[in-house]
Length: 465
Image (cartoon, rainbow, N blue to C red; front, side, top):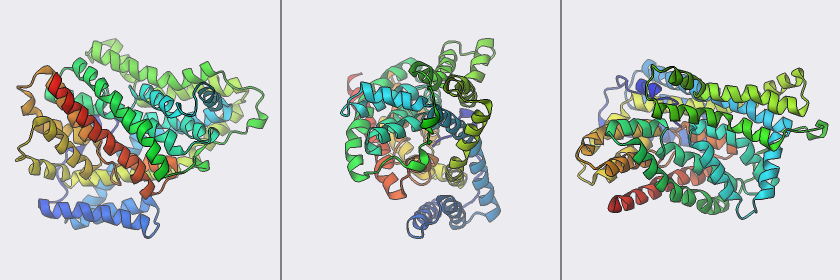
């Protein structure tokens, strides 16, 4: 869905790979997306191949040299796999440990016992929002997937009824609430107050996540009535387990990366001095890779050993967890490659050029610019940074609260309608076993609801604060 660190985003700002005018570039974007959709839906081509061909087609239509198009695509694929890919692999290992040890069953059994069928979507959105507060979207996905799929399977729920609330909780936290990279960069660019932005962000996030999660999931479950895909549910050979981990140990293992990242975020806010030893330590242990790696290592003892696994069985469990995600990694990586091709072609700058003469209120302007860049490039964080940079002069004369609302408006726009140029689109599609049309009707619509509903609440708040 996005880059995994603010530093990685600097790499997006490169010399355009083509000198095409805005009109030709706009046509090239539409043609590239059309090629991808056509290859997948009409010719049933694998998404990895379709995204690769679509990226090459985009470069050709834009008049870029083939070598430069290939370089952009491979760079985007490489950076996406380097960031998201490692997290997906670690998440798959943790998920397999959870499933094989019976830990995931323990969590699911407890949730099903405590929550009624009517309240289950609300329980999922609450869990996802808490877990998603300090986590990147991709990390939250890989942590929650085993629980979401097992709750849907064991409780005989439509996958959308359980999955949409979880995705909504993660996505709202990612787009609106610091310490996620997009909101943090926007706060810095606009000179907004972090505490005020956080407080107003929570006010906007609560009603937004309710509408886009539990409420919308009712309709999504009717439009796309599917069960949890068997191939994505780690199969647990339950008959040969004499015992399984306790609920407390399992929950502590899942929450370990959440706690480590939250500690890092709090230290970054309170200390705010990269030279301090404490911040140096938390920057390491709170990075997504180290936090998830720590959870995997701890899980080998709290989950694997607690279930009576031998060293050999632990090794086998890790090995078996990686094979099913190979296709997911390639598709998500290719989505990142297509996104980078769009950015390197100068699509973001094209949107900024068009928006310079728009005469509309600042909050709506920030949202619209972020929407346009999001639709064109597929990156929520790139959209946030670009839009924040463009509207930064407007924030100079704003009150503290309105500068914070401008940050939130830009973040809301950056979530609008995730589609085929967003690596997150493919991540959700593959994990939930949907086709492109089903993913658009559920995930893409949910993202749009989050964007529009949060803007509505931001504009309402602007009238009273």
